[in-house]
Every structure is written in C-alpha cells, then in structure tokens.
Amino acid sequence: MSDTAWCMPRQSRRSRMHRTRTGKRIELTSRDIEIFKLLERYRYLRSTFIHAFVGGASETRFKERLGHLYHEDTYLNRPQQQWQFAHSRYMPAVYENADAARDVLRGYGLLDAGSGLSPGSAGANRQFAHTLMICEILASIELGVRADPNLRFISWTEIFAKAPESTRNSPYPFRIPVPLAQVQAEQRTFQGNAFIVPDGLFGLEYAVGGKKSYRFFALEADRATMPVVRSRSDQTSFLKKILAYLEIAGRQLYKSHLGLPNLLMLTVTTVERHKDQMMSALRQISGGSAAFLFKATSGLGTFNKAPVPTPTILTDPWERVGYTPLRINDPNPQG
Image 1 (spheres, rainbow, N blue to C red):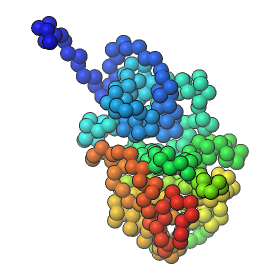
Image 2: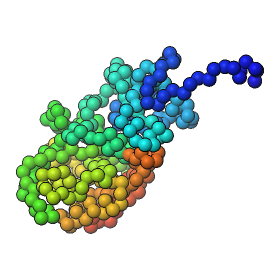
Image 3: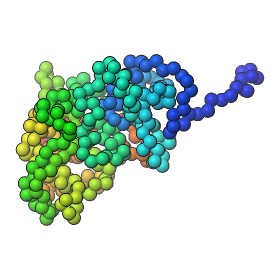
Image 4: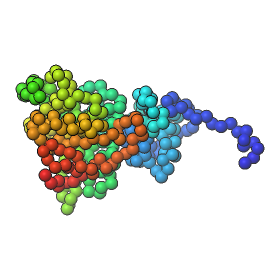
C-alpha cells in the first residue's frame, strides 16, 4: 500500500435511520423488480427474509443493494417504527415499498388485483410489531412451500382475485360478517352481528399422483398481548374470535364470502402458556375442533433477537384440541 493510501479519506457509514444520498445512479435489475413484487405482497420484511426469497450468494452484497434502493432513489422505505425497539439498530433492517417501487410495478403491469389491501390491513389499526409478525409467519410458510415440488403457495392476492364479485367490490373484502347467535361461554353472553378480519389468508395446492387438492387457512398472530377471556363481552378477546370462527366454519361463510371450499384456522402465539390457555378456551366451548390449529414460537416478529426465516413452521406439527397434531404440508393427514 502506498503512503498516499493512508491519507485517503474514509467514506463515512450511512445512517440506518435516515437517507443519505451519494449520487450513485441506480439501474434497476430483474431482481429489484422481484423485491418490489415481494414487498407488495408482504408489506414488511427484514433483509434476511427478502434475501431468502430473491437474494444471491452474497448476503452482504444483497444488503448493500437494498441500502442503495433505500438511500439513492427512494424505491424502498425503512419503517421508522422499527427504531423504537432497544436492539433494532443491531437487527436486520425492515423494508417496505415506497411509492417509486409501486410506480415501477404499475409501469410493468405487475400490481396485483387489490394491491394495497391485505387481510390484516382491514379492521383495527394494527401495531407495527404485530404486522411484522404476520408477514414473517406467512413468508416462512411460503419459503417452506418453495422447497417442496408437490406444493404451491396460494397468496391472498390470488384468493382475492377469485373471490365473489360482491367481495371484490367491497371496501373491506376480507371483513367476514359473522351473525352470532346468543351463545353462553365462560358465563358470558355473546350475541348480535359482528365481523372478523383474519390477520392472514393463504392456501396450499397439493399435487399427489397427478391429482390436485386444496386447503385454505386463516391466520391469527398473537404476541401474547390479547387476553384469552375478558370480564366484559363487548371487549376484544381470543374467546370472541373462537366463537366467530366456529360460526364461520359451521355456516361455511368462507364459501359465500371468499369462494373457498374449506378453511382451517391457524393461531401462532409467542408464549407456550398463552397457547395452552387458548386451547383450553376452545375445549370449554366446543370440546374440540379439527379446524383450529395452534403453535407457539418465540422466533418470529420479535425485536429481542434477530428472527430468521423459519420454513419448518410448514412441516412441524400443529396442535389441535381433541385431535392428533396436523402437519399442514401433508395432503392426506390422519385423524
């Protein structure tokens, strides 16, 4: 190294929280377009998840590319909500599409029907960490599907595109109306009309022996913050969700509202004890149900440690009340 090399100014490290343009010219690539498409389907994803879908051999170079798309031409955003967590500066950055990315997709005719909607975006104003957890669960399942040549992942955009016209024309297409008959549960009375908006919605296509079959899933992601039961019946609780989903299953409302042939309910929570309480509530109401599946995992949607894509969530067994555990990748489960 020459003496002059020691005197060369060192380029300062760019802030993770604020854009710092260097004037670098960005030429979009086909992989960039795939990133935009992915983030249009999953609103939020960490860099590690995006790399698992579309990245190359070098994760470091890939993160640098995401940085250029964030800093230079504002194709991507890094949501400010992520920086409120204590360890966020040491975590893989979370990205979402900026308007410039959507303009590119629109120019290529790649904006899906219902773009800007998602099951979890309707209804209550979801917290950032909760929404990120939903995205990481669904993305992990899709990554697991991609590793199995006999499976195909059916995203919410495909479900929306094939839903009944009345649903597609609704401003809240994923809001499923649920007429609750008067029901006694835990010495509380629930009655009247309500609706439920799944946190996520997807399907699996199974190809076995030249034949195809389908199974669809509503996802509920819980960060162990929603009480399983409440003292007042007009307050939100997991118990009310159970009752609503039992009505959806019993009346087959997934057929009339979404055009789906079946629907299973997946619940993912972050605490084992909370999962057991949820299963106990279902047991007390109905004795058990093959349509409700439960799993506890602390590795997704957290800011205490860096979550990683978890495709085994597809192949690991999900617990059921009154029935044997079910692997959702299995086209012909027993029990």
